[in-house]
Image: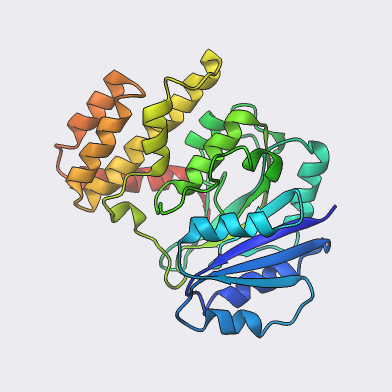
Length: 315
């Protein structure tokens, strides 16, 4: 089974070689690696072109954003199964081997995930929680609730997408969006397909990498997944239990995003985000909106407590 790997690249000259090397050193060898440079202005492209390997293919485009780069890489890929990796991050050597085992268990799922660990902005390693029994290998029966209650379940560096389902999303990753564009894709795929997960840690996310958009939530932009689902939640045809789980995720995620915006002093954006959540649940959305009038330090305290609760390992 051949896999495709897509790395979108923009100004990551210090970390891109680490990412590429982690792919080329995989124990599973049947793959192609596509790096899509999104108009880098540093030496990123030179670093990539200095790596000679017949599995590596490099494409360039003018700067249009990470969504365009990801979409282009997926379009150019030759495999039905496309694994994503950010240029900041890296994989353990058995990552693709683990993904292949998931695919072999259920070839017709839409999303395959292997647990990730993180290095925070100070370079300290930690492992977020997952609300599944461990070890875990197989289908996630309630993806939305599991996603809501987990911290290391899905990101853009631990996911493998089945193009059969990705191509059903109009436009793929939303172009021009910087917040929630990836969450939108995970949710949309989970609405139309199965999601499989392995609790084996095979991805490493570096929040301390250079030029990382660590403070996306400080912008005035509301997460795209909330812009989309707040308008369309009533039109989505789901059974009652699945819809409740989706709304559960959206409400909980809205609380996290609003809290982050308030903590960074973006009260206007926080209130706009809270208003969107009223479309999910009038009572909880209204409560969240009222919370935006509280002092921001309260949300810093809540975040610190949440981080302690949702972090299961540090070293």
